[in-house]
Image 1 (cartoon, rainbow, N blue to C red):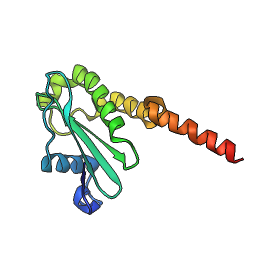
Image 2: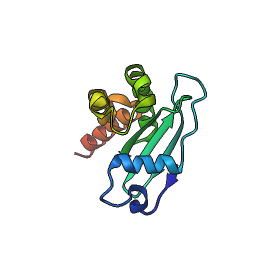
Image 3: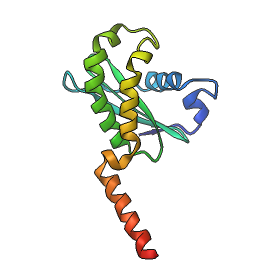
Image 4: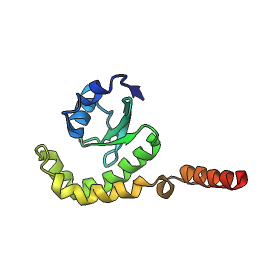
Length: 144
């Protein structure tokens, strides 16, 4: 995990898009390659003051990344990227190899949106977060 103390350095100021920011982060600190073909690996986490970028790549150079809040567990973000990789590479793998900037944005949006919705609620995808939520609910009941 890297920390970038100046959020302006990570995101290039308010006028830059998230895609530009992620591209800059990955360009500055490329992921390691996956150890096996057909898998995502070499994960890295780079944090700013308010966000973190989690990313990894396969042996062919396809890189997937997600931006989350600092409180979002990076292990769950990696789980999401690993799951997304299987679906994304199956649907868009060949196109991604020759794609130009933003050419897959519209085509991949339904897949990316559904994955983000699924992982938006940690209790649905992470047993530890689900248990913590249940323990916190019991603590509140005991305090009342």
